[in-house]
Length: 324
Image: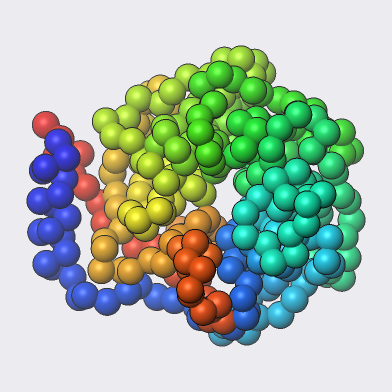
């Protein structure tokens, strides 16, 4: 199957121009945004910062400005706009690349904050670090249909649950989540009452019941997605996954059995040249990806970048009967 898949990509690549897809470039010196969220009410993209915790906003013309900042926000990661369109939630920690890191917060901080999108003021700040005795990396989140928020902790291999009134608890610490290094990462809520969660280190996707957090199943797929990161549930049967760490591509998966299993149905091309994509957001049928450029932070000789880009993902379909 993999050999035929690679041949197909070569054929597809030969039929398209060798150039990247549409980008919105902006300047945010040494910011290294990881999370991204789009709000149709304001027609703005919101981006996080692994380096200084800043929450910024970006116009479609590429104008960047700060929405919220204070020095206690060592790093900000996953972002989500609340369904009411008035609040932005952010995962806050000190997992890896913050220039503001300190001994009392390094791999110890785990917070979920919310910000008023009109004023930029912080509305809530929930501490998650005391829930599990472990290293912490609060990475991504998802809202369910009751207003609860589920937060992945990639070092603690835990999903937290935060109720609408701010009460936090451990939702799931299933053994299937456990791995070395960065584990569970991207997360989405499915309206049929379960979460889909990917694991960066194992390349697997898990289906987790919101009614029974011990009901965790591995979604059956013909391949693993090592380096999997952000997720978008496009519709009940379609999932978009961001993959980085050398692969740097966006994939689309589809199911015919409510995510007991899934098949690869779409992919971006190498020619689009994503730069360590981390997370994605949607605007209608459009999918926009944050190029985090994290590989530069792994290189001690790299000069900090000031220019970053939000890039549109153009997914090429893979024929349904291709694997047969």
